Length: 403
Image (cartoon, rainbow, N blue to C red; front, side, top):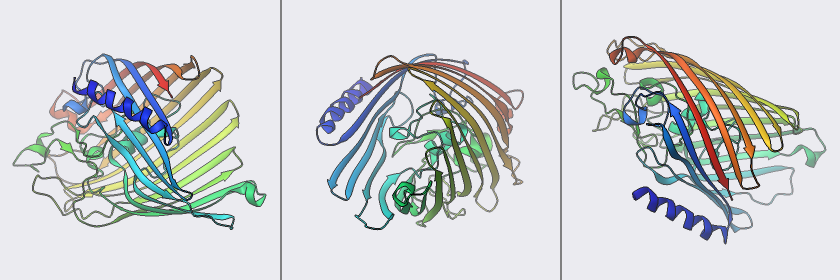
């Protein structure tokens, strides 16, 4: 009943906003079939979002852009889910300022809560993937733990305006509210799914004895991804370079600049997390595109209580010929445990393969089938099973409506 009320609220907002702003609405129901193990969202060891087989409301999204003045736009993304702790809230809400400029180099300022444009695959409205039902390991984590709550300033030049084949963009940001970033990578490991954390959200994970016990760290088996703890600013900077519409490269460096020695009264820690991200995209022809992303970083909590390196990468290919789309992706990921705290082993490594096939039924409706296998080793699983190995299969059949 609670979720039905939320969905009706979302639908009424969609129709209301459509009268005043550029608004997109998406509704996706997914039938999922998986192993009979508990999801991390229910404090289980499975790395997938859904708790049970059957039908789920996997996505309900309103994405709107309301022009306030000629150079000011208010943008927001409102999400509803049938799973997780926070099921109805904003994932993004920000102001964008594009002042008029006679120069070929155009400035832009964003203020509020939004994603840095790191992803190579989440390019659809509402930070969704246009090709897959599940995100890569990299972008599943970004959707869980990373959101800018601050200001981003950028400068860009469109190659067409200066009769060049090359376009570029440079940007920088300062922000607050990402102090717990790194918690999930260390205490759960990478996961592959499409649920974005909402504001005021909590994300649960397996209750590892060395983490939750009073004679250990005494921390809860959940994290609040956007909590501000140490009152320090984080930052990132990046650059985009594109050749015509055929190829693009994006580089980002991110540092949340958190004080790793600060802990709050409910035992939520600040984690100093930083990483490099590189994305590549190449359109061989209008029907065939390949793209890839590489992430390399580290995270520190306490005086080397947790000290981890992490890295992940994927390569994906998409072939589209109306009304059909076929997409495949190969992921790999690793978290390396560098500390000496034996009660909290953090090492994990794995690989995943995903294949997705979709068909547009009409302009507004589509159906997608997706199969994924995710396997690897996670050291802290030995507290809950006979070994550290896991293998997870997931089949999904999704019906999507967009307006």
